[in-house]
Picture 1: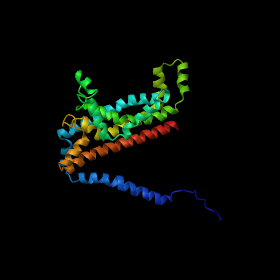
Picture 2: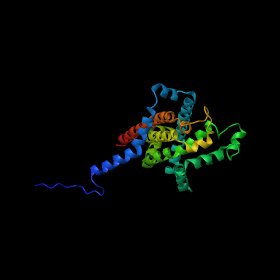
Picture 3: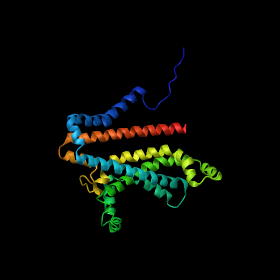
Picture 4: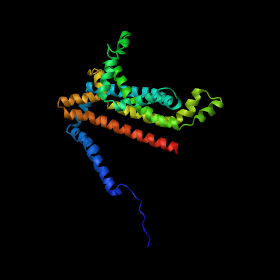
Length: 276
């Protein structure tokens, strides 16, 4: 008679824990999101298309996606640079700067929006100097770009930083000893190893920027056709009791977020395969 050996586990069995997991996800994620789709189905196809193709909506989509993309690209450059400095160099105040990177995670977005507006307003600490040379930061698309760059930077830094920490510095020394310039060492040796993590961080930054509201609503000025983002337009439609129109916009943003999450998961799988 053979004895069945069971691995000891602190948690209950697989069936119970899986059931709790699915119930929790259904209550917190799936049911609320399905409510968005159900509410949207109250619109006819013609009304749905009309809601998404009005000039104001198209302008808000253009501003949101274009500025979020630019912010993600900026964070790709400066996030990689910041991660490299924090991992490769020792200097006074390094831990303080490293902690400041996570500040957008901990800071309430409304507080960030008010702080950025106070700094970049025409009479602000930095805004008055920009205004003197004809650059309007606050209450313009540039202000939205500043806010989205601010909240997206940690995603790139924290995604790339562990990969840089795992890179052996001897690889760079070997490339230099073989006559490679710094540019070629970066492009041919370092970038291929950093590329999957960098793309993941950029995608996370872009996804976060698409749904940002609190830090943008103050600094953007909320001018229709000029500085109005999609999350703000959704709130505006809700205040006007246009629930179907608001959920139509929300459904499009939900689809965009789902696609981005799919892309992020593919990039992470690719990174694991390369590492293996």
